[in-house]
Length: 253
Image (cartoon, rainbow, N blue to C red; front, top):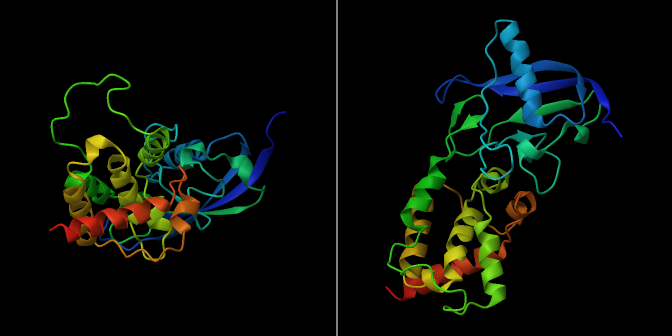
């Protein structure tokens, strides 16, 4: 069955020339567009209209358009990545909206993610946290045989679930405190659960938490909003593990 045609959508889009400029919403109209159109394709169509009218196109970030890179980070009608669950913005389709609806589109709102232009924010803060300790630097040898290092299947699966984090920042944008705890917890958990990550566990937890605090992210108050809006459904149970890893590291200092 073909998707419905949306005769008109009103788009209220945040426009901001640069990090220092004062931004504001501007209103645009999109007409006669298929509900099967993805959200980013709709923005492409809008930009084609704007270019044809000799107007500045809307700047927005994207790369893979397959829900694995985390770059297409938009706040849509008050929700990170929009009204669908377990999807990124590039996987969102217009069938999720009603004909005649007004769609409000904003960048992430966090002091640690300053606006670069329009809908693009600087998410280098996540990269700096990762660089602080989200890796294994000790020599672990070559690729072992499948059964050489015994890892319980449930631990391996949990580590893989944590590693599914794409670092999009939806957790920060959704949290009332702009906390990055879910992101940091996922990156710590994916190593803490496996033998290869045990050697540097204490240093990793201390360094990543310290960098998170230094960059101005807020504190976690366990509201669970981060988990509910995470496109990969990273569990807040990882935050509990991060807290344990961090406290254990502090006690061993």
